Length: 230
Image (tube, rainbow, N blue to C red; front, side):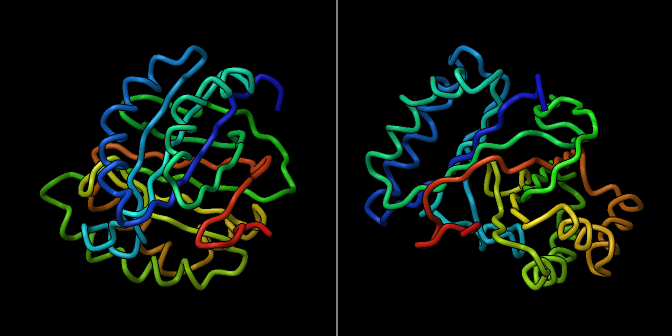
């Protein structure tokens, strides 16, 4: 994948005493990370279970940073931010990723570009993100639980989290799969997901949406005491 941007994703788990510090860093680190040379796109993220996409899902003990870089050298310049989180986090999991496919917008940008089709036989990650049409949010939330329950039963799923820039209205998912075939089976063959995709088109839930598939190049650390890909 020569010339493709490098995507880094970090998740940090903090203790109850660390929640206030994490909230503070969500505010102060936004400007710091955006000023980093070689950065193409970045979002500091809250996380949750992704089972309903309401505030009930939110996990104040886990936070994240997704960033898109020109190259590996540029990504190392994020150290002042990532080291700051690492100083008080109880656990950390990170991944280096390369875009394989992407469509749609995130904050009016194409963060992963328009990658050319590339064969990849290793584990893959999927990123979804949507900005809801406010008046249609309740219908969307009612449709989420069956899909989420089916997701967590899917063969080949190694981890799945809800991600978002705000507790409501700006939300998405990050998932890791043992192969592209496993992700395809969930995306195209599972009835609950297919039904929601059809309703998305007919009901117009989203003011903006993005889907991306990424090659998992490497991972480090743990979530909930384990490496999801171990």
